[in-house]
Image (tube, rainbow, N blue to C red):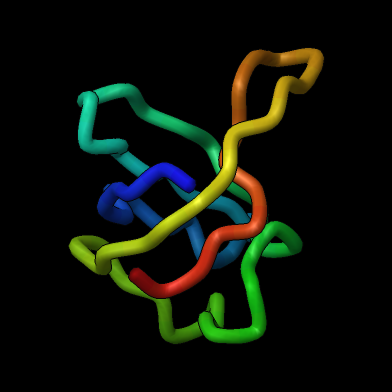
Amino acid sequence: MTTGTVKKVVADRGFGFIVAEDAKEYFFHRGALDSSLDFDRLAGGERVEFEIETSPKGPRATRVRSA
């Protein structure tokens, strides 16, 4: 698992971005959230853990959960 901080949430479009501890930025979709997080209440600055998967557009965060 990788640890990071939610950088930005684009609520009306259902996605956001996480900055990992190594300063790399990862896209996430609301469907990638674990049941421990509520997308509608997610805010920038929240600490999270996640896994990284490869997608056609590059690496993205999946299985995102509270840290």
